[in-house]
Length: 246
Image 1 (cartoon, rainbow, N blue to C red):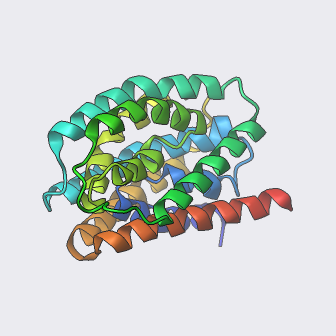
Image 2: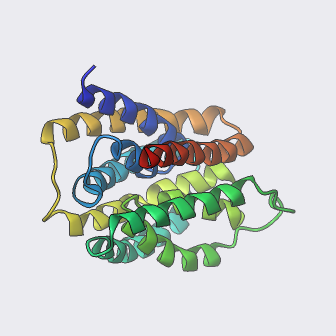
């Protein structure tokens, strides 16, 4: 099996899972593509951000058909994230790649801890949308720096401020679509795309992200969705850590 086939098959699986979570695929694609591509800023991040915007867009369609999007809140979040994300991408051009990986691992560890930590009265709280809106600015800058789009940070933030996981996933899927492309813009002049591979990755991303969102909206319980997110980011990150230590 050639390397290109392995990448396409792997991204098919990751797109399906990220579609289930309403994230866009970049948060998982970053460590996965890093196994095959040496240049984080010019190869991995541009491809990941491209796929992130496309998979998030089709995940949005899946959640929207089941009524799991608050469009007003999603639109406001999308505007804030879109304006903020390019700042992080610009910083990524001037920060050492080892520093960027370090930030990624710290962010994942914190989110995993918060997702698995019980929160008293979580289901009774009214969602604190204003707090989520304020946090969206640093989240978008940090995620632009990491090249993952804001979804992998914003989705658990929405859960932690009181949104039910399926509603958080639906809002997140729409909110992160435009900033994924705005974060991509600073990379375009220096990006190194394999157009054939990119085309196949986009195709499988479209199909499997939509299927993942539809299955979640119909069949996956809220608590299971929250746990699935936590497990996935831990597994992907531990895998990347082992490859860096070899």
